[in-house]
Length: 367
Ligand SMILES: Cc1ncc(COP(=O)(O)O)c(C=O)c1O
Image (spheres, rainbow, N blue to C red):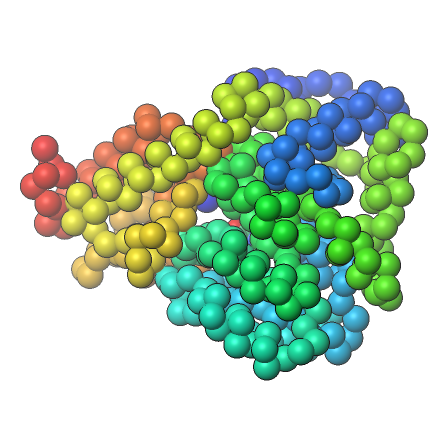
């Protein structure tokens, strides 16, 4: 499984999920919930509130928007791919007036353009940024964007769904008001949980907002967590909590900095391997390449479906392009438990598939 989530699970995580049910409002769940949240805060490098939602990543995106948007509010959405465009769609559903600052798919958001848009529009309530645009393999300059957003007194919502845990995203240092992560990505547990941190500044806005959401009303998550025992307003996916506990144990045993360093290392291996074969990375510059997913241009004359089928026959699953990039790129996910071993197996499978399809591989790659 070398797609950009869901990622493959450790044996211990699989075993952790075979435990019996307990009450979702009992002491045992309360203690586990608290312990998981404490450690998630360390991963997020934040002292802000943090909640676990039983919902996939999009649920956390919706929660961030739903808690601060009233019809007519201005939301600035930075867009450069499928997932960043999703924020725009969600904001529109909640009646926001969306101001879009976009970049070509394959390029990163230009912070200067964000500054210009904020200077022109004095009353923007929040800015959305996708840290790791999974659809294009691009990492956006959140720290630079944050400096601009914060100097305008605006809230910053960051989707770190496919990078939190695998890359540096210090939430407090970067003054991120809402930061979102997904369970099936770098945390290497099944899909179904998302995590959302909420700053004090964000709470001020939430309290003033006429919120049109029930399941994602963050005030009820906060109240439930303050109960004895701590809990969630609606039934938490207990099995996923077992998995999360185990996955966090593994991450802390390895060391959070080491986990990030491993992600950086395997990302570079993937990029170098791809370039050595004579293939081209999709992002326009290597410095904006993601550390958790590598997007590669499909060479002329190679059919995407046929190519990925041949890779699959070698036991490796990679992803194709999404939306307008269908048939144009393929993507290798390297997040979660991925090591050099899986990267080498993946690169070999790609090399063999291309060679079978008569793609003229660089000699260096054949050696
Ligand atoms: C950057 C990003 N945002 C949002 C999502 C949506 O998450 P989910 O599919 O878990 O709802 C994904 C999923 O791939 C993603 O990579």
